[in-house]
Structure formats: structure tokens, C-alpha cells
Length: 515
Image (tube, rainbow, N blue to C red; front, side, top):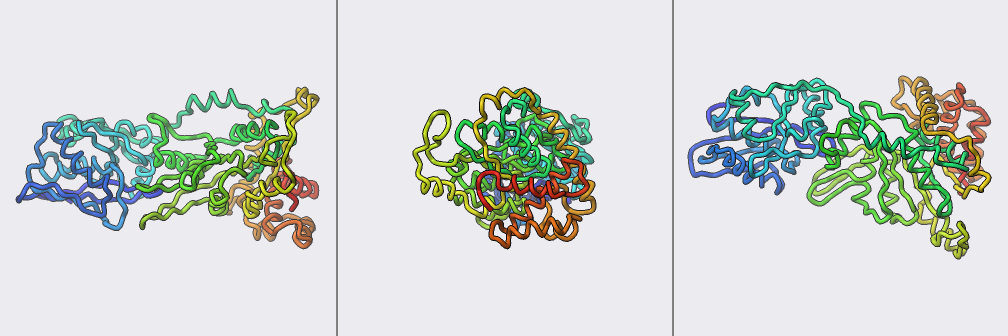
């Protein structure tokens, strides 16, 4: 909509990783000179008035010498950050007759303005462009520094500018910038390639059982608990788990990249994240840093940044129990819901949780150091890990220091060969689960496993006896069933056998915690 003194452009408010279309309406008329912004705005948006004014003056454009009112609607959508600056400037330019409306019609505009008129990068460009495309928008205008991120989205025209003067000149027809039609560009980062060279499962020697357990975890998407004394290789094992995971599929890669974008952690010029992320927060991490939050604006935490990859909690018993228990929601649903001051945000958080812990607080018992902890202290230390959280760990690995003879074994498995087996096992699971909402064994609900998966009833009854004897919870039995399917997929078996059930029980109880 545009007319004498009245104009409208569009921008995008990103809440969580969901974009909401925002109308930027401007009225320029006679009266006392004023520049007013309205529409449920936070401080950073209200400050856009001064940034836009300075940017126009830096371009030598005197368009604010009249009464100007800018309304951002709908009022019920939260609006924070500086990404509305460029759309406000475009709307003002239209309302004052500085440019013709053709270039801005049905375009979503995002970008921050510096006082000198340069257009600065903003967070959340990728989810904003994805939301624009889903609403049928044909064109987006973004900062040049965010152009590569925006062009990850196909089927929408992307224009980028580095300075307000460039955009105004283009809209006025004096210097038309050739449009670039979006395409899905994928570039593997050099860091990824270097990580694959420097970090490999072949580095792990003398731990064949642990490596096999991680292979099963990767194939089925299962959570892992590593228990062992310091120096036994827990961190080495966990840090190499991403090297045996397959590349992210396109949908997951877009979501993962979007999460890093809204967190402001996507490096300039970086393309689509194709490798599973690895997040390893320190044990002093706060709850907002782990699951997301913030005072001025909501941002995703480490759990969401690990979406599609690994969340590694080293020294898990040192974490605050309340912080650990905050992970129970995303472990079950794969989503984190945040509520702050009337704002609700939803962040995907489907990750594999890997926890590692010493068996006692002193860290002795290895390398010649004698453990000084009493049995009571040991129990109290591990009791910091709540039962409901441990019950969600599909695989528990008791990590021991390998002997010199174990270390001398030359037959080791590298990440590439293990990853190939993982890819093939996941492909079998996908074929078996075709027509269902799930693609990984770890996602399967217990009721479906018992009644629709085709597993032999006698094997299910064998596991149910663990519940009757009090040695396992029903959730624990369901997790053993999921794990047995993963082991069958790795062995190319049509369904789990008795041996797979036994192996699943061993992996489930392997870290020394009886069911």
C-alpha cells in the first residue's frame, strides 16, 4: 500500500527461529517536525529513529523535515533488535516521495543502519528468509554481509546492499543492481576438513567395546553416559563421536544454521552447516546458557545449538542438579519452550546427550593415585545425577584404563569406516520406518515398539520380567528395545534376536548402574 504521504514496507520479527511478518507503515504529513515510532517496540527498535535520521543525513538526504509517524504492526508481535532499521528507512523514503514503490513492493527488508549510512549485518537472516518464502514473498533485501546466508534459501530473489545510498539509488532507478536468484549453496568449512584429519576414532586404542558402543549410539541416535576414572579416555571418546555421524540432511542443516544465526554465532561468509554440531559447555554453565533465555532478548542456549549433533557434558556430576534436570524436556520432546515477559519462543533441541563423569569427587584410582573417597561420598557424588535423567541414557559405558597389551593392538577402526556402517544402518532404519514420523530408532515410542515393530513377543516378555523384578523401569525396557533394533540394523538383521536383546541389556547397564 502506498499513496501521497503514506507508504508500507515489510520486515520480519524472528521469535525463536520462527519469522513473523511485520508491516512497516509510514505517514509523512504537515505539522510540527517530528519522527515517531509506535507498535509494541523495545528500546533497540525505538532507537532506530536516531539511527535512521543520522543515516539519511550521512547520505545527504533531507527527508525528515516534516511530521513522520512510523507504525510497526501487528502490535501483538514482539519486536526487538535493530533489524527493522532498513525497512523503516525504505518506508520513510517511499512516504516522502524519495523513491518509487516498484522495488520495495512485496519485499521483506532486514538490516541495521550505522550512523554513516552503512548497512550492518543482523542476526536471524536465514530464518527470516525462510519465513518470507513460506509466506509467498518474492524478494528479500538484506545487508551485503548476510547475502551468502540469505542465498541458502532457494526460490526467492535476494538483493543485498552495503549502504543506504546504494539501496535508495537502486530504488530510484539510477543504479539498478542486478538481482541474484537464491540457490542452495553448500560450502564445507576448512575447519571441518581439518577436524576430520586431526580427530579420528582410530586415535582410540585399547577401548574396542567403548568404540562399538559409540557406533551403536551414532547409528540409532542414542544418549550415552560415560563413567570412568580420570585419564581413561572419556573425553577422547566423546569428542570423536561427531566424526562417525553422517552429514546433516538439508532440513536439519537449515534449522541448525538458523539457530546459530539467531544466536549471532554464524561467522560472516559461512555457508550451510552440513556437519553435526558439538557443544561442550563448562560445568559452571547457568540454566539460561544451557537451555536458552536472556534478559533483553531471548537467544538459544547450548542445548539448541547442539540440534542435530552432540551435547557433551563433561564432569556431569559437577553441574548444578537443577541445570541438568532442565534437559529433561528437550530429551523427551526435542524442543525447548521459553517464556520471558510475555514473549514465548520455541527452539528446536533434538540432540544426542553424552555425559561423562568420574566415579568419585577426588578423581583418584588411576595413574598411581589412590582414591580417598568413602563409599558414602561416592554414592552422594553420583546421586547429583538424578534418576530420571540417568533413566534417559540408552547406553552406559564403563571406561577403564587400557593395559599396555591393549594399547599395543594394531587393529583399530577409523572414523570413515565406522561412519559408513552408521550410514548404512540408518538407511535400513529409514526404510523400515517409512510412512511413520520417525527416522531413528531412538525416536520410537514404546507402544509402537511393542505392538507394531514386529519384534518377537517372547523377547518383549523377557524384558518385561526386568520390570516385574524391579530391576528396570518401563522406560528402561523401551530404551533396550530401541537399542536392540539399532544393533539389528548394524548386523543387517531383519529384526532383533535374543543376542541383540542381551547386548542391549549389557549396553544399557554397562556403566555400573543396575537397573
